[in-house]
Length: 380
Image 1 (cartoon, one colour):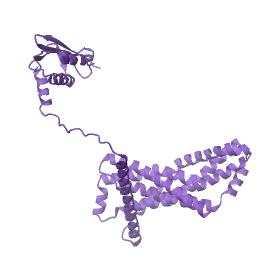
Image 2 (tube, rainbow, N blue to C red):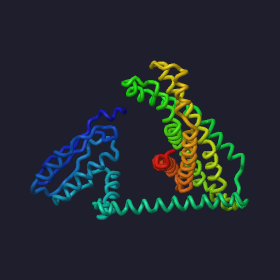
Image 3 (spheres, rainbow, N blue to C red):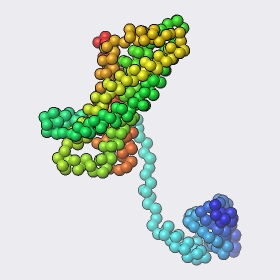
């Protein structure tokens, strides 16, 4: 902190023969501690028969805009009380700044008034936004379907190397995080089930709980949530950056369909890799449940594996595979849709990534609930 910060600055008012003289002294710099100006303002408000307000700046040292802001308060207070002001004793630079301040008066309607919104109006606005978002989703899905048909007919295409690159990005590169999360989910399921099953001496059924929970629900669901935050946000950021850099417009100029060239390979990669990641997550969850069951409860490894093989049927794996494939479509649609709808600024890219994750998770949870209800009604 500079030494000038320790030099005191002050404003003192003195009444002299029907005039009020305000003495300004010290160094008014950025790091200086401002003195209280309220007593001086109160003295101006209480003064009577004051014909002139003058400033004495003989003891004024260095100053910056901080002094000007305090002087503006004094000048405004004098104007409210009808006291004439003599600014000739102020330095020329301060007089120039004050002239600029009062040259253009502040507009009366410069500040927006906060209008109270009724609950009915809020509901109407939210409904209109929901309808608009639904239209955008339907339009994007329709464009995607048209691009798929055009690709099948040979009217549009994408590079195969891009497809395998996306498969690698959302497949092998995601194995570490999928391994960790699935293993921990299996551990949690085993501990939660063991707390209740041990009360009845049925620890052997921990294997049933973990294996069925992972294959039918948790394996695909947790993998989908991981991929929505990892891959869906990446897709939105990539396409959003292309949109900001006008690369998508360049593809249209070259007569290349952006939906087929950019979105379709990403979607195919997720549809292909999600069931495999789901199978891997199921295996890691069963391994995690086995670690807890064998090491902490009176269950051998052979018994755990036998109960797992007995509990899990092929239909359970098929249900998980179908769910994970649907989740892959939803993640790719959410990420690519938000990326294609991105604005033209850098902040819009971040907003697109955030919106892609939120949209994907909402779609995943809703789709999982619907498919679970359907499976329950069909007895699967």
